[in-house]
Image (cartoon, rainbow over all chains, first blue to last red):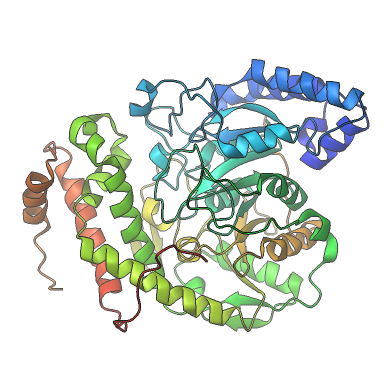
Length: 466
Length: 61
């Protein structure tokens, strides 16, 4: 087998397994070798499920031998540790949850990937209870950025970004409430899909903000995102938040290109309070797509503010009992926010939800005139670990709260987004651009991302690790 | 809302109402977060919405 195949795309791995050029077991072993070699310094994994991956691989190889290769045969992947993995404690980035018994069953999305022939390598580091944009964790150590281990991986799906950028697995699952897939995708130079709110089942994953939580994949190619996304879809009665929508086959459409799509750049709020690299990355992608038009997302700052209020109050409501009894066991960087959120007046939350209805109507109107909107994924490259403040437009701001400036207004109304990685001329770090599509049109965002990938405008190489 | 919000007093009162024990070492950052949320919420609350704009019963994008 080629020892480099683990660093190729998931699609290439699956194709090789199906052609019997390599076995699924070969791929599981190779992934375990890379994890063993790289994870100790990068902090991506909190639990490695080696026995499980090998057993799943043997089952896949048996099917391949019978000529019944499943669609994701031999695809190594890992999941943010808020997904239930049978037999593993779902820590959700916390110290407190480590007292829980091991999960009795897999999260729905894991059952879907298992049925499709993918191999689960383990659970991944994350910001505590997903209240994080940095990838830093006081209990498990920080997930580091493989492109520069002195910098943040981004969060809260930090381990997901680290594992994929370091070439440990080609695909990881994460969650995104305000940007937690798109931020690590931006900082680690990866493609990240935040599907439409309600698209994928959240059953048996640890919640953060029920009104805003999404799950989705991070990968090194848009094709891998589509391949995995198609396998993850499907109605799940165990998730009452899931929309009862028919599945959307995105992989067969991904090579259609962008012809006929009206692509615009988000102006106003989305062109302010950012470092030059964020502006330049959007301009690079816009030029490649011939997007000359600029549109204004109305009241984007208020949308971000309303998402902030709902997040603060709703997550703290979920944690109230623990905050009364075990506040000292929280990560100091999340504890104060949870305590503060428990005190948010109900009237503010109601106002935020009413504004959400208004903003959704405005976004629907906007998408009558365009098919795709481009915006920065983060206001800057990955900051150095431990950075507390950043100066944007002459104003010193806390880093943690402002990494999600441009992701929060979009997930607030659940629009599908693919974050695509741009490498500016001479830059040693990547930065992401959001490709935002109308609700339920993940296929459109994936087509755009694929075109950017095949034309070389965007790229997600495995980090060079010395 | 007024701009003379007494965040310290609010935190002290609400901690008792809700049953939270806040270590004195944590108090400055809890107060800072309450003040930040208050400022952010102001932006939302200042926006004029028609009374018929209601929260979604089940939100769908």
